[in-house]
Amino acid sequence: MIYSKLIWAFMKIGILGFGGGLAIISLIRDSISEFTDMSSETFANIVAIAQVTPGPVAINTATYVGFETAGILGSVAATVSVAIPSFIMITLIARMTERYKNSRAVKGAFAGVRPVTVGMIGSALITLTLPAVAGASRLGAGFLPEALCKLPVDVVSLAICIMTALLVGKYKKNPFIVLIIMGAIGGLLGV
Image (cartoon, rainbow, N blue to C red; front, side, top):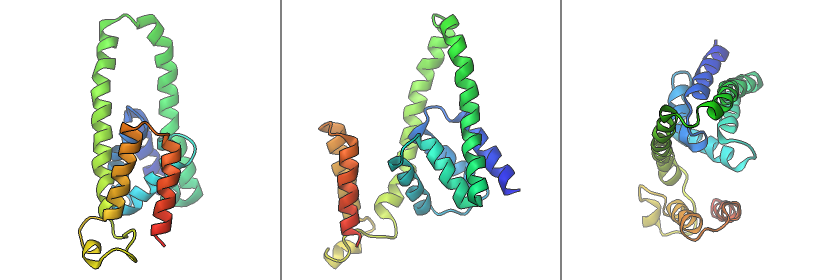
């Protein structure tokens, strides 16, 4: 029964997941909430792991969620289910795009999908922010003043988040290098 739920949930994600990657994080969270009681912090950790492992975020997240929910078979079911609809749709779209590339309807559809994608990425930001900066674990709890540790927000995690956004967004630093550095800082402060 759990396999059919995983297949159906990730098939819907594969069909409706416009924008891919972070744009579908909220869709994944909503789709799996029907059959798993995964906490927001656990889900945020899964997304973080999916971000730092090679491959598309949607595939990595599906694989991990499937495994956490139903083991190896669940992992295979979720991964295949999220990938197949996209594969079929992109094959059809690639054939049709060349033929209809000058169509006003096609141009309008592409123009309409762009803001939806940005909105879905914003939704992922909302879904992932609270567990990232206000989760149960606190970075630097061993050396920060007690008053800072009692705040509802993890100041070190918030600082890492802001520094990352500035380094990658404003100063155009290599995201891979920033990820390694910030992960190392988190690792050192989390001990």
